[in-house]
Length: 415
Length: 190
Image 1 (cartoon, one colour):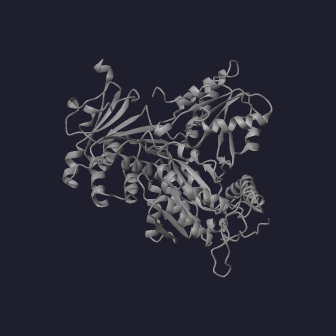
Image 2 (cartoon, rainbow over the protein chains, first blue to last red; image 1 turned 30 degrees about the horizontal axis):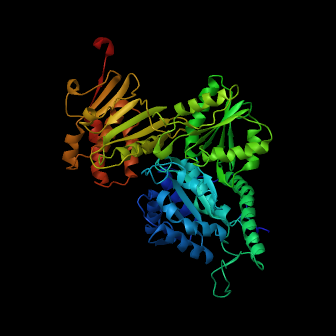
Image 3 (cartoon, rainbow over the protein chains, first blue to last red; image 1 turned 60 degrees about the horizontal axis):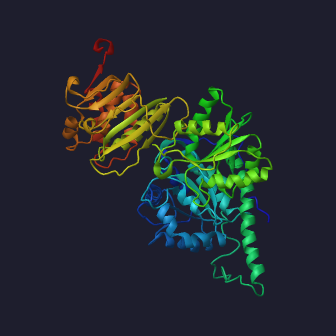
């Protein structure tokens, strides 16, 4: 598949940008506005987040030119956007927790129909025991449904990634929906300094809108969309395999596209984010801890303190969780002798964190045994501080000389 | 790194105050991050919010456990909540109170106290006990960490739910002008 060069040339110097102070949810909304979606659908479920309120206000104030549909539930929200995307619109929504659970059926359909819808997940812990606080359980629960999922570390990264998400989703080699995950509470309500790109520069970055070219709700070229397929007879099996294999290929292609889009972003706007896997002080490290999302800031501070104390430890952060960046992670894992993985959710089947479970698969491919263990912290709004990370570092260091425990360590068990 | 913990009750604007202070610090070229604590934000229930500022980029997005300064925007809170938990030795308390220093609850770790009759002044300005902008003025006066001018510019960019910008500007200035600052001399006390 070829990709037309629709973008304007990249300027030699990054553009000047306005400095503001915003919470993560507002940063996401500003990113959405800059990406110029045609259609937004939302449902103000309790608990929603202030993200959709910020989007609604931008539209009401005339700062964003998009149709907004206040649907009757999250299931309808995504169904409405599917219609919009099929008609060629750039589409956006945000959800979390119970809302995400309620939209699961159209959520599955979105990736199957290869619709490049962008949806922020302001991540929350699971619905019961009753909690409306942050955690990664909601996003982790839907990680196997063919959406690209990226996790942000800072408020600035939320803003920038939200814009990049549209370009990644709509790339003709990808054509998949993208979740931009931002940690509920610490990132969504954390207020910090951001640089806001200019509209013209974002327009140049996004290029000409070409959302729907493979299938369309277009009266001039009527066609069947998502026909019944599969089964064991006729062309059913091969047709179904072609669709599924194409989805898997799109997921794998996204790894390359995510890297390309991040590289272009860095050139145009002067801000670099590791697109798949970030290494922090990993060179020369004997062992490493692994993080995801907003916990990483405190982890980096802990790594600096541990390094100052003579410990040979580094950090690996995952940004792109789905598809899991196997090759990029292999390169990082190849540098170390022991690993501690910190998850903000649980994997019930394996009695460990989901990111740890995924990483064990990658460790197998490494072909060399690295002792590792799982840490679970920050559930339901709990804090993961530098103090917690020092415990993670100490426990991981012990793996160099003694057997790895099978059970996970619950970081907030005594908080 | 300078860390501030705000204590208040739901509806008094402690969370908004942390965000406004962060904006003012940004005006002065500093890095600042504010985070609300997460609980059920009912009117009247104790709430906490956090602010970090630094000359360098701030990476950790966590709550604050060992603050340099406490801003308590409610005069009765210290009776029901341990507002002094984790305060660094010699730390600062900026307290809304109409009482003299001798009658204010102060932990051994406190080195400097700023007192402002924020409720009394707020009732004059807003006819309601909204003390957050007043106490930002009191904080500026007590610590000098932020200037009154930067706070004024920050307020100009804020949305106010319960009152207008003009009233909040008056509150900020009166908070600054009507705060008394006391240094606690521990050597004498010992």
